[in-house]
Length: 340
Figure: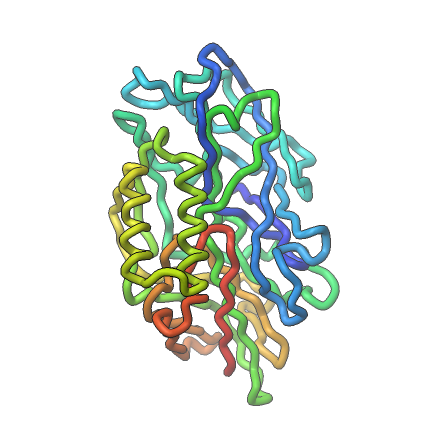
């Protein structure tokens, strides 16, 4: 399975469902595209550094073998044409990567790009596309972090989703992907002096489903609507609007995108059993478990569950009603502090 690594502070990260819009040239034909990766905002580390990469200018980075699903979308076509495009060798560590694939001609709506390709499930009439959000993410032991953050940052670089459409996407310019998902950063440390070994971290949302299939009408995914999702989350987190107003406006934006879902669960688990020794030792320094989630998640009560290497568990309950900063918003890291 392919991986996109983006650097978090001292870490490499994968990005998140996102898009751009507008119209493209009808006769344009391409077999390659170039994509750039955006930063992720938020203060996540103990030192209070902002954004994701504390090592290299807050940048997100590609990885060799990353794959994008490219769609050619036409107003007269019942179903978009698709093709898998693969990042060139030597893309690891680059903020901009070149992707090659089959020759494709842009439809009247142009192109739509989706990362990662293996989460794209199907396409259907009237330019609908279906994507899948799984319930398990797997820590990648090949993520390379050095210095004081070595071994302290845990994530699955395939857990993120990103996309871009139309005039923003052609074979001649670099397209910067935008965010839709946000990141729950579960920060875990021991304050008792005892060391516990964590093999997985789960988040259960008591109000919203987190996993399952999502179907969206591709031409309806526009920059303006994605920007509205980001602004909406920020306004709610800042206390500018009520929860009822937030949910109403969220549903309105999703409806405009032709959104529908087949939810299958409200729990997402980051499996860390590939960590050296089979579990992550927790001591008096935070370990950072990054879990990408849908916008609007954690707006109400939710539970973080640590599973230890002896298969015992410990639950921690949080209330998004009383602390609005927990609500997941596109391109933003939300911190959830857990002490054992």
